Length: 250
Image 1 (cartoon, rainbow, N blue to C red):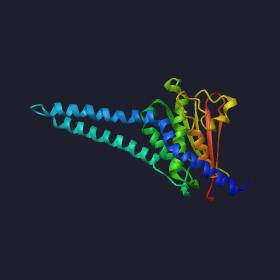
Image 2 (cartoon, rainbow, N blue to C red; image 1 turned 180 degrees about the horizontal axis):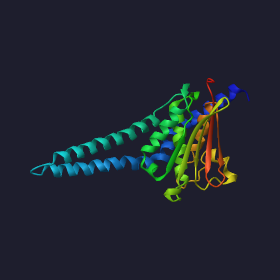
Image 3 (cartoon, helix red, strand yellow; image 1 turned 45 degrees about the horizontal axis):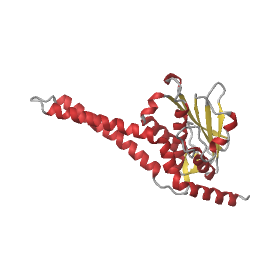
C-alpha cells in the first residue's frame, strides 16, 4: 500500500470516527467534568444563600461580604474555565495541520486535568523538554489524545490508596522525533491485551465505550506518528506517542 493510499485510508477512518469521537471521548470524561462543574456551582449556591443572610443583618460585615463575593467570582470563573476547555475539546476541528510546539497541547491537557477535582487524588509529575518540539499537528486533536490518556491513567489507579497514585508525563526529543510518555502506577495491562487496547470497542472499563484509544491511534497515525503501550517493571503502564519533528533545531 502506497503512502498516498495509507493517508486516504486514515482520513476515511478518521472521518468515520469523527461523528462519534468527540462525544465518545467526552463520555469517558463526563462524570469527572460534571463533578468538577458541580463543585463550583454548589459553592456559588452556598455563598449566595450566605450572602442573603448577611445582607439581612442590621449591620452587615463588609469584610465578610467582600470575601463572599470574591469566592463567588472565583468559583464562577472556575466553572467557566471548565466549560471553555470542554467547548474547545468538542469544537469541530479540521484535518489541517500546522507547525506547532508539541508541548503546547501537552501543557494544555495537564492544565485542564489539574483543574478537575479528581486531580487532587493523584500525584502528577511533569518533565517537559527544555527545547521546542516543532511538529506538524492539530492542537485540538492532540490535546484530546493527551487528556484521554491522562484520564485513563487516573482511572487505572482508582483502586489504589491515594498516596500510591502517581502519574508521570514527559516530553523529549528522540533523534528526529518528539516523544510524549504518560505513565501510571496502576496494575498495568494484561500482556495478551497490550495490542488490543487500541482496537475499536475494546475497553477494560465496565462502562467504557472502547473508542478513546482507537480514536487516539487514528489521530496520531494521521499525524504520521506512532502510539504504543508498555507495562512498567514493578507495576503500572506507560503510553508512548512519537511524532516526526517538522524541523530539526540544534
